[in-house]
Structures are given as structure tokens and as C-alpha cells.
Length: 159
Image 1 (tube, one colour):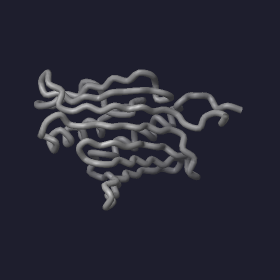
Image 2 (cartoon, rainbow, N blue to C red):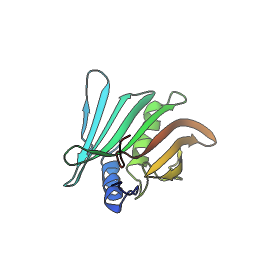
Image 3 (tube, helix red, strand yellow):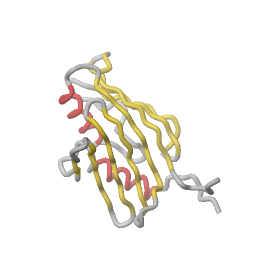
Image 4 (cartoon, rainbow, N blue to C red):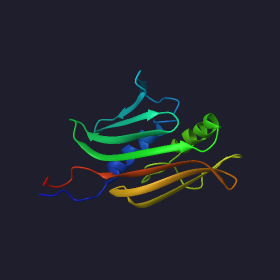
């Protein structure tokens, strides 16, 4: 029997909690390995979240939500980079964006800004299956961009 391809509110709420405690959060649970791998973890009574990324500039990685017991149910792959040399300021802004997201988004809220930068986010599809792109701008100039691909995994029969 196939499971319905829907991201329920419980998963959406968990992803929101994981994002607000992930990259950019003061209480992030991050492990840095000698090979350049970074692992961010978060869990509650129902789900576990693991964000593994490589590099700093540029970077690539994957986020996965697991049901307790180890079965992956949602995943998102990504790659991003800064265009220019203000890496620290741009990633500090990105951290604020990612910890100020909202229910139903895999990343930050389109239009978030401060006095220096603005954040643009475009997503095609829903959390069940999507592609997305984020950009950080200073004025009209793109100073950072990243692409994403994600959705539910292992929801049907294996062929």
C-alpha cells in the first residue's frame, strides 16, 4: 500500500523547529570533523534531523528527516556560494535568515532584510517535492546564491 505524498503538519512543525535550531542558531548542535564535514543534529520524540555539509566556500550538503528508528522520510540536497569576498558578513546574515523562517518552508522567508542585505527565496512545488533557489542581494547585486532539490523519500513501492 502506497503512502500518501503529503508532508503533514507534524513534519512541517518539526522542520521549522530544526531550522530555528540549525545553522545560524546560538544553540546549534554542530560537529566539525577533520575531513571538512559538518554535521548538525536535532531531534524530538518523533523525528531526527541531520544536516551534513562540506566546505565553507562554496559548500554543498544534504538535510534529512528520519522517523525515530532510522527510516528517512524527507531529504533536501543543496549547494551555494558567495560571489565576492565578504563571506563572513553574508553567512552571518544567512544564519539570521534561516533561524527566522516559517511553517512550510525549507529555508528562510522571501523578503527578509536588514540595513545591508536582502534575501530572496523562490520555490517550485511543495515540501513533498520541490526545487528552490535563494539569493542574498546588496542593493541590486547578487552576493550569494544557492540551489535546492528536495521532498519526501521512500513513500512508495521500490521497483
